[in-house]
Image 1 (cartoon, rainbow, N blue to C red):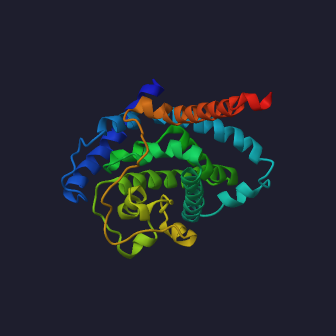
Image 2 (image 1 turned 90 degrees about the vertical axis):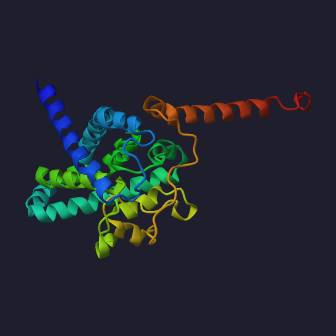
Image 3 (image 1 turned 60 degrees about the horizontal axis):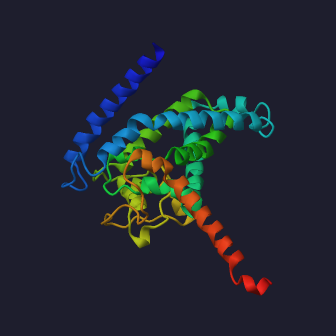
Length: 280
């Protein structure tokens, strides 16, 4: 019974979000010619409905085990001090701490070749819209959520502040991926906008490895990774051969890793058998 109610609530939320963003992308589109059912939209619908299951299972297991270990690191009583703060202050602190974690994890997924194989799936999006925000490999999302949210839980922030941050985070994630021409004016340096995040997805050399923050662009400004010119990107996506379908994308990073390991072993074997007469 509880499972069916939860599923209904989730479906209702999805319908509400769709009813907001689909018309919004028609009223103030960034690319007016882009269709609602754009390329690979059905694949991203599958992500929307089914990807949360492996993500939450992995996240709960990983964070649960790490929280037990964090008890030996976090001073006893710190949680009471943190939780005693006003909700508005806690919310600001949660956003700052969480987005710093997102920045670090996100940058690692770009810098480390093995991790990039997972993150390349999100960057394979060639037409940006609100639905594209859901195309994320579970490993990518589990690691990023853990790095950003583990300190929040370990420090003892209130559930209300965490809930407010979660609501803001998810709403902003949909907006920054959306096919909308919405400008924040001078606040674009403080709050992540579609222009900010679209440049992160741009398949243009000067935009590579830029704009890692999810909510606060000034983190990129401080780290020297901010890139937000006046124009918008001409192309999105990656040059990697990412397969088009959900089940193929789930195994894609592991297949590439296995293939690389196999090639390395074959290389060792070739070296070992080269010029056998010289060993005699």
